[in-house]
Image 1 (cartoon, rainbow, N blue to C red):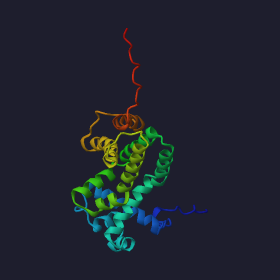
Image 2: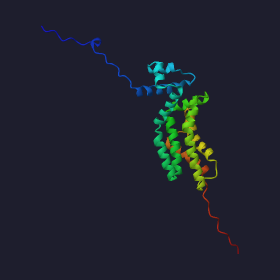
Image 3: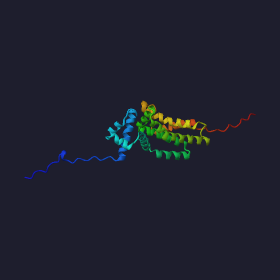
Image 4: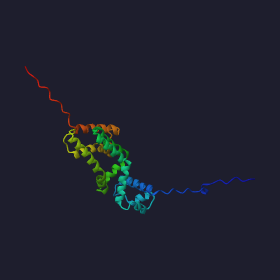
Length: 231
């Protein structure tokens, strides 16, 4: 009688060798974990040892990818700009600015801020921690990214003042007040669970832009009434 062929058991099956993570994939993994841990516990509450343990690597691997803390912080900011598709955003803003489409220009900025913060509240928390702890990432973010958009907005508003469309206001104050509206919207949603004002990013951007333009735009002049002749 022929015996049945042997049945393969789990122990006898070949073990699959885990795919080695590429250097770039490992770098992105470290950045993602670091960003998540910093947003949860702050910078003072997280060590490279914790980040390495969660990534399943040694601290030496972390330092191989990021020789200094500054390199890691810069990589976090760079990754967030890529996630936000900052290059496409700037292209769109320059197009709208060139067309002098005030309403769409301001709406696009506010909508972008609301969408990005709602998509990833962890980055907003990360910025809060860095500012409250006096961490250098906060200063890096302002120097490399925030200052550029404030200057861009300020230059646009100043140009529209010269063209007689906007009232005489401080362009930098106006730029910051515009940016503050969508930022505070998402901050209150995140920190306080505030649902008093809800809506899509598009609807909220339209509402805030209407308020902003009502405050900054020069009112249309109306012709003086015709003189009344008395007999």
